[in-house]
Length: 233
Image 1: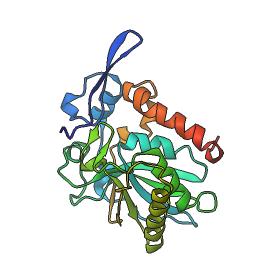
Image 2: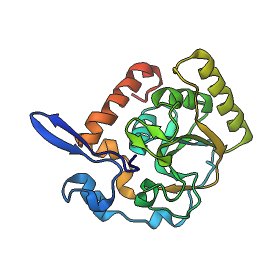
Image 3: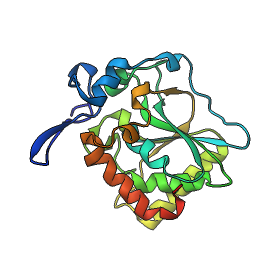
């Protein structure tokens, strides 16, 4: 099985469009916003791990649920969420690059780090949305994205977050929302390395890019329908 995010070929508007996901930069076509972002990518922000705690009563959650383009786009929609940053967590290599993570050589998962106001949205609320907007029952896989970098994981920042994650998992399993048991990894947070600049706000900046239109947009539409009372707008 490939460890690169798949290349999809679909017919859109009568023409065939290649949808690039997690692929080596050498394989990215030399045109379009994704290629430009790849060529311009900087790693300055990866010189240090992101902080694991917020200030002024804000809290931090670190979650992995497959492609971070998707999860970032979803959680940015939620009221009470103040910042969503894509990056890499759960691995053993310092300052990993996107290509290293995609190749499955570092042990990291594509993750997002969420800064949120617990007065507006609780950690449990985030978890319920997390567990119902990706498939937590497939180990090391989300759809056609296969590899440990796409594993479902909660990287808890406190014992309270750990207990809450375990409680929500039991609750959702008991409700039989999914046809199989949840296999999400619940493990202590260690470090989070911010992703390269061109990954940030990827869906918002590239709504007409093929992968965004075919994979991410439907997920966002479902979130807006199911959790409309939780949205910022």
